[in-house]
Length: 104
Image (cartoon, rainbow, N blue to C red; front, side, top):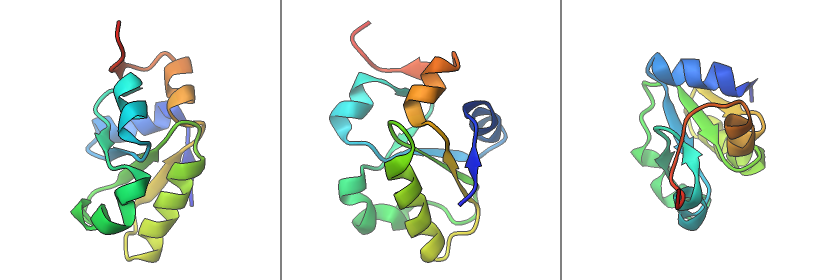
């Protein structure tokens, strides 16, 4: 599966891609990339059908490992336009890209 940098991922989202965070709810609440949709890995196999097949999908987790697994699952189940965000939410935040959540 192709990996993209946080900057590439953000550009894709601005152009209409869906950003899907596969971490668990408590992790997502703490901090997540702005605009990310939560679909926890623990529920992923049951709910992946909620994701559109006609949009690019950028997968993200904490560091990139879980989202790579989830993205590969999508590719194995008929999705075509799926990429993984290299370095995950950590890299997104370190790149200075907008985040949401947390107890500011």
